[in-house]
Image (cartoon, rainbow over the protein chains, first blue to last red):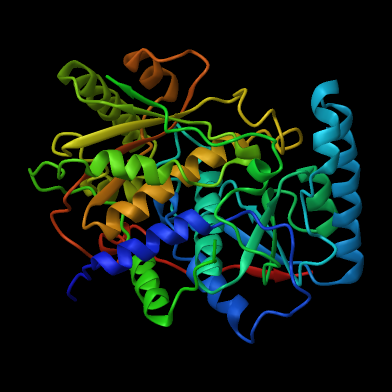
Length: 210
Length: 210
């Protein structure tokens, strides 16, 4: 099989994809197209994984009681995070919209199996954290593919991983990596929402020579 | 600014990129084009990061003594990993080529600052591991952009993170996320090398409903 070569037009579009991929917290009330989610999960499943372990576990959260439990958990953790803010940042923090758990039509909890048989442990003896890193790359793959399909994704991390695992009643061995909101974005931007809201701004890359 | 829309041709090419992106362990003895590395690091710097923290720190490892130290560290850790294999897998493990530290023209140690000022801690109170996850997404962004440019990347994790940090004499607070080999790949494949070598094979995605 011949290797593909990617032309300059593709590379320009890929660059636009990296520039416009946002953490989305505002969704339209519109369902995903038929088959879109399965296709995105198949794509995510082709992400790199340490030792070819494919340790990601996708939990599709649809049932209203499960969604309500996640929403309550977010509100609890976000109140704690607000209380932990310094006096000069608390008002800004309180204004931020950091999740879209009420409106996102599709929600996926991504877990990692921290010690899967698949891959036979290759590559993670000295850096066991690479198993979680593999699940992160599956999420990032899904994120980019979603954006290319005109969809938006928001990664919610303001959750207690153990309580999410318990609420969703999955294996006690699994660890939560990220909780994803997916749907049609209500708006597009090439600037992060946290930058538009004055929380912080992007800097050039930090590079050291050795 | 108008949001881009990505046409079906781009989405097909993106799918090919995900299919053909490999962990590369065989490189040609050919330098990267002028400016390519800076461009790739700029692209990686646009990866998602928790709270807009951009916690990745890129260390370009060029000096022969530094490269020799990393190579020695890999050989030591890989010998330990071989010794830890079960009797029935040790011969297969010993045959695998798991790094290209001798031949890769460009080598980058990616660290994370686990508690940067930038981002003001947003989003990582309950899941501090998301700071390392951000650096993982910078690596994955660099990986995909490299592949689109006809380059290959190999992620070496068979290293002791503390010893790599000490060998490269960077801040004691930084943690190694991955050590990257970058260059022109000596071959292309749409099948992972670990699958071709009979180590393991890919499975369909693991999906649970809740």
